[in-house]
Length: 301
Image (cartoon, rainbow, N blue to C red):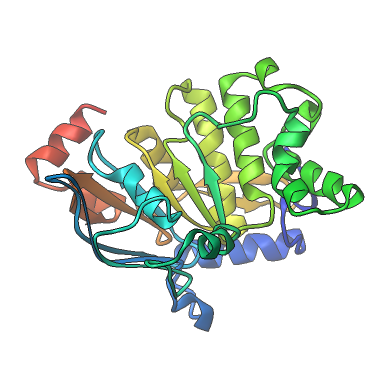
């Protein structure tokens, strides 16, 4: 375990972190800045040729909330992430990030928006010719940050994912799970308050997938990060909707089971099928859904 001083971006006292984490996890927090969603889609339509990819999609991701997007391949899940990043433009509708309408932004304007967002890819998407250090430091080097400031920041992010010992290794020396964790460290450079996960556990063994989910929980519960977590794996849903991260009296991050309630208030589920939202709500409601597609999906996972 690592101490709270090592992992927290803002580094408040351990007791305060634990208290705040519980408050934001189990209750709606009445802060003015939380009124504006971190991400909002308003009636978004996107089609390629004659195929509708997203059909009048509307949803919000509130501050500190994790939105888990479920569904089979081709359902439109990853397309949502590309739209948030401005890599695709909708045919109709509006997309807002932190209340800012980015729908018609050009590439220069989107570069400014992307600085607020961390992106975790399915395969880690590391530069094979660069060390772990240089991969994580890449954005800071691009911004011209002095090296004496870069190294402490890189080490801080690697401590967050428990990989500081791998700082001098090359990607080829890492396991698949370690590569994903380095990808998360790189995504967190600059302390973004929005993180997008695109199938981050695909192809990983269950223990490693669990580790990735724990990192997502730490961001949600201890750092108040808003996120979209695209997945087709039910194990991810089980972890994210029933457990939460706190810092105990010894300053260690621990994961506790939520208890009788099956879903944390800051974690919601949205299921996609053929570009349509067929479910939006809590994990508990999802498991009770009568929709034949949902029931078949749950049985198959």
